[in-house]
Image (tube, rainbow, N blue to C red; front, side, top):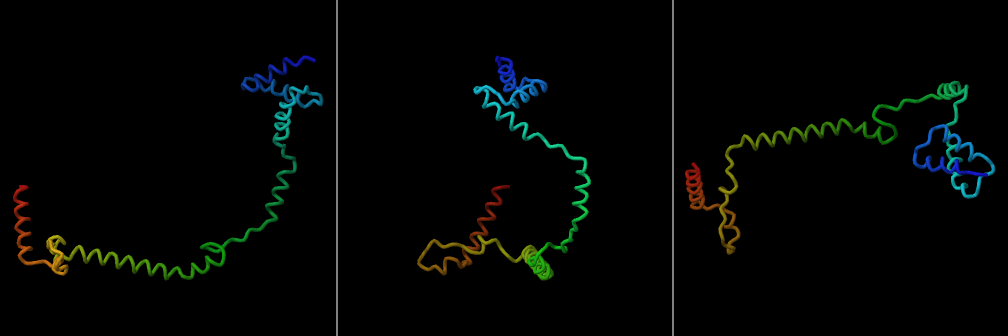
Length: 162
């Protein structure tokens, strides 16, 4: 028997150029019991397509689904989650809220205190560094003459920039 037409259809099928009718011809051909040996690898492709065809829903499908849904009762979970851990967490919730509020108030209070406290000088004017490692305690203590010299330098640098 001559299978040239089937071979041409297969070539067009792999190039995505076949119509729905031509694809149906291929499916019908490969459903036959006798398929030539050299075309057998393609038979598996069309057999899989046939098996994967969507099954049609029966007439009683809606009735069966309604029966399944009506038979089930759903118990609502308590607010805040389910299980033993959620109940434990919800009992500690007021304490967490209070701790968060205290932390917020302390943070705002400290920020306000720093911003309104005008007595602080910048750190570089407060502590002058001495280039001597003989006495480390003296290195971080401000000396009055060094503070005066720094103030004069800052005034001079401000006058130069104007």
